Amino acid sequence: MQFTSQIVEQAVDALSSFPGIGKRTALRLVMYLMNRPESEVAHLADSIIKLKTDLHLCSRCRTVSDQEQCDICSDSRRDNQLICVVEDFSDLMAIEATAQFKGIYHVLGGLISPMEGVGPSDLSIELLLERVAEEKPKEVILALSATVEGDTTMYYVAKKLQDFDVEVSNIARGISVGGELEYVDEITLGRSLLQRTQYTLS
Amino acid sequence: MQFTSQIVEQAVDALSSFPGIGKRTALRLVMYLMNRPESEVAHLADSIIKLKTDLHLCSRCRTVSDQEQCDICSDSRRDNQLICVVEDFSDLMAIEATAQFKGIYHVLGGLISPMEGVGPSDLSIELLLERVAEEKPKEVILALSATVEGDTTMYYVAKKLQDFDVEVSNIARGISVGGELEYVDEITLGRSLLQRTQYTLS
Image (cartoon, rainbow over all chains, first blue to last red):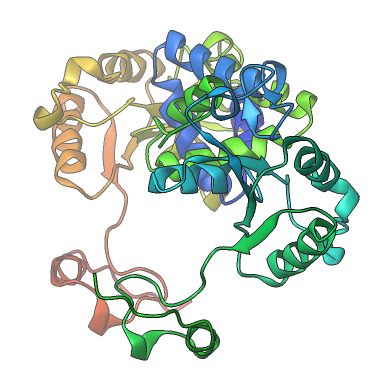
């Protein structure tokens, strides 16, 4: 791409560094920004920079937070006996969106992945163990992705939690709600057979 | 979406104001930014704000430029006898990318569209007429999109240019290079028949 403006070129380069945004999309975004009022563009720039300058990780659960402790950890209505371990902030939000969970969280900040050079010490596993020792929860729910990395991390964390008097569970894996059986992949289907639950008439 | 952080929520809202970027994509971008070094994020924010504070429109052709006159207008190697009229900056860049055009440009800043409330006075048509009167080019090429708005604008500009001693042309419309005949839509195919050119053995 040839630009008549260095400023435009720089903005396109910066925006196309985003994952999934190429030069063409970046140029479209730049064209859009050029036509917006200055106050709006300044607000966007400000929101972006605040992500680095003003954002904290909750001292207790390691989710992103505006204060030293996040809203969920500070909420007295949440069940402190139940800690749900998630990979990151977006998984936490996905679970919050279900409105099915009233406990508190622990954000690992990633998954163990030897391929990407992420070991247990890069994650907040040590902090989780400290929390379990101190807060003495009844149950730790492992809500991690059903991938090799998720399984590895789950195994590692569960193994570490053996030393404590706490129940460890993981979220159910099986066919999706609304999923038609013939289109479910065989691994999921096989696992959902093995992990079948008792059918209760309600 | 429920957020544990106002800062994250604000950034997601700001990014999802972009065309084609929804809340989920915005959250993914925010997560990406949170993990980048502060200098990189500051550079992005700075590039964005510069689009409003440092960018000019070339006083001659109205393309975006870092200086009072753009690189193309200031380039003495460009043919000043040939003015190519385009809708916006990205169309100019598309033509520059072909490396087939050695003249100069005139950027309208949009197309006439009664539906969107854009009239001739909202575009830089008056400036184009002044340029033609003053610079006395040999030819004005209308390189506008093959849409209703493009056709309307082309007609309007061509009509205005009748008062001047200048050739007016428009870019060829027909089947794409590499396009298979049976898949070309009938309007394009019909027009490409009507506007057939003489075949020259070279």
